[in-house]
Every structure is written in C-alpha cells, then in structure tokens.
Length: 125
Image 1: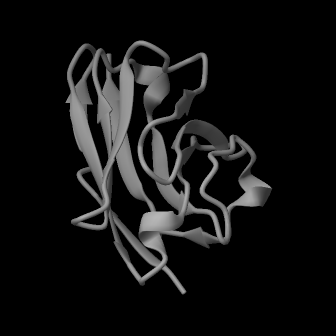
Image 2: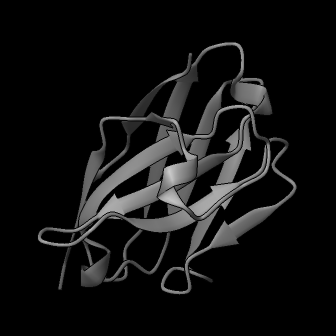
C-alpha cells in the first residue's frame, strides 16, 4: 500500500515557477515508477510527467517538455515536479500517482494504482 500527499500548489503569474512535491508512505515507494497528471476544469485528466523507479529515466508530455522537470528522492520518499515558464493553460489540479509492481514509467493513467488527493495550480495571464 502506498499513500500519496501532494503539496506546493498555488497562484502564479504567467512566466513564474512552482515546485510541487509528493510525499509517499509505504515500503514499496523506492521500487515504484511515479507520475504526475493534471485535470483542468471541464477536461479529462492528462499525463504530465513520469519517472522510473531509480530516477534515471523520465518522460514528459509535449506541452510541458523543456519547462517542467520531474525528480525523485528515494531516501526521502518524495517526488517533485519543478514547473518553470508557467502558462495560463497549465492551470489545473495536479495529481501524483504511483504504479504498483512496476518500476518502469508510463504515460497511461490506467497503469497507476495509487493516487494523491491533488493540489491546485492556477496561472494568471
């Protein structure tokens, strides 16, 4: 069992930065691939970024590539999403997710078993 708690959301102007954190509990965190997803009002949840179990491999949605960076610290059971050059279209609730029994990252929501409650990110123009 893995429990996830996101933090770090807030309000920023376009061009600003935010760093989201996801604190995980459970012994299996260090062997699990992790991902960030987001859901904007009236839209379906979409993939943002993912990282494999040891942090060597990462994957990003085209819309955030070059602006967002995912990282993890297995010693502290945390995953981070550094968001730079924020745009109004980045406004959404951001969710942290963990795969079960797999250390390889995925961009598919259905392959993640554990989810956090989400943190709101709002970017004003």
